[in-house]
Image (cartoon, rainbow, N blue to C red; front, side):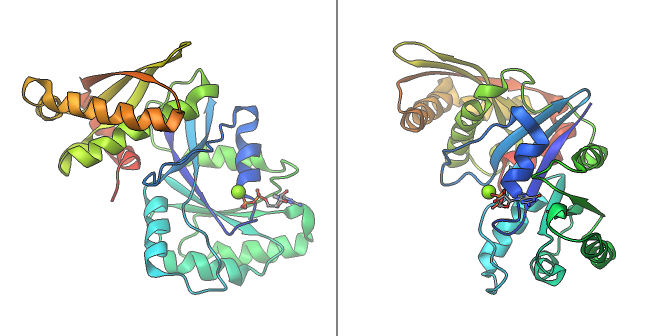
Length: 289
Ligand code: GDP
Ligand code: MG
């Protein structure tokens, strides 16, 4: 099983949304709500035989006409580095130098594919030149030319993406994809509270998975697992006489209620899963740098 996170980056209009749609097809999950501190806007999950790809947009706007603010650059870079793979999307109608001027200063360490989009709009020669331009750039692991709109060459892109993903279990349930966004954001809100209430180590080592999400007539019943790697971490999360988990539960419920606009009954369970340690790199996706 392979699973991992793929961050898509590019100027507005490069075709990020279109590409996401095209890559995941009907399984696209759009997340319209976003809490302020959510760094990763998970948009779409691609589940297949033996793999799960979690695609996300990157935060921040990019307008290479302006010199990027350093902070924004850091945020963008951080989000990209948290992924297993970055897709650097290029609008082929623009000169490759324009995109390069944005990609190069990122100084990415994470492997990146340069994805040349809108092949349907330009000549084969333009595509060839852009391929040649990016091929030897230090951040570029591979160049692929696609048309997101016409769904051209996307199988090749998907195959290459899966190739790059680490071995590991899926991060999200492979069924019930339709309500996954809500589930995910519910998990995010719990995670956000963990960040607020606990010291450094805990948030890094904890992840949250929503095990049950039931919309009942008068309330939404949610069961969420907080997964940690060690008993000691579980003890900290629970607190003496369960005082911390109670506080966490109350505060998380309040924020989930305002997010959903509905009354919520929230149950939290802390589980120790040592094997999550193997996925520590991935767990960074759930945390902040
Ligand atoms: P985003 O801002 O990066 O998310 O870009 P969008 O996905 O919203 O796309 C911006 C525009 O480019 C839309 O009008 C898309 O239809 C168009 N677009 C995206 N991909 C392609 C493509 O492969 N070919 C063509 N011709 N247009 C595309
Ligand atoms: Mg978009």
